[in-house]
Amino acid sequence: MGRTKGGTRNGEGHVYKHCRLCGRPFRRFKSKLAPPSYGSFCTRACFWAAWHLFNLALETERLEPIFKELAAILKEEEKKKAAADMKKAA
View 1: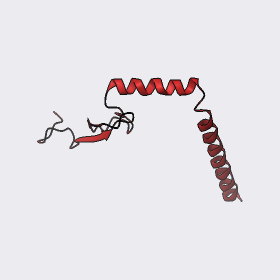
View 2 (view 1 turned 120 degrees about the vertical axis):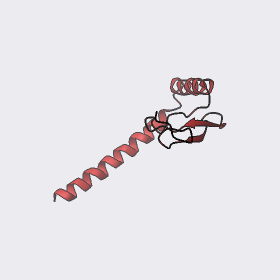
View 3 (view 1 turned 90 degrees about the vertical axis):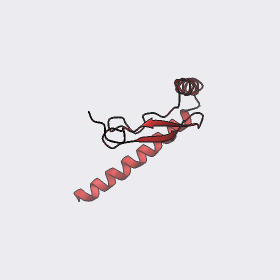
């Protein structure tokens, strides 16, 4: 049930993505239920290696400049939105 003549569900097929860690291409089944970021790593080993690298970057405070830059960008966007809302209200 749910399968079509081509062997896929709901007319969906496979999609090839590149692993975010090693860059190796891998195939994953397209699903309407899975979020777009689902399936970013080719193996569990790549996922856990990326996890450990991220934790290491957090521990050594390498991500602090990125977080500060992001906070500045978000503040700037909030100011622009507030100015646009004030313009609409006037």
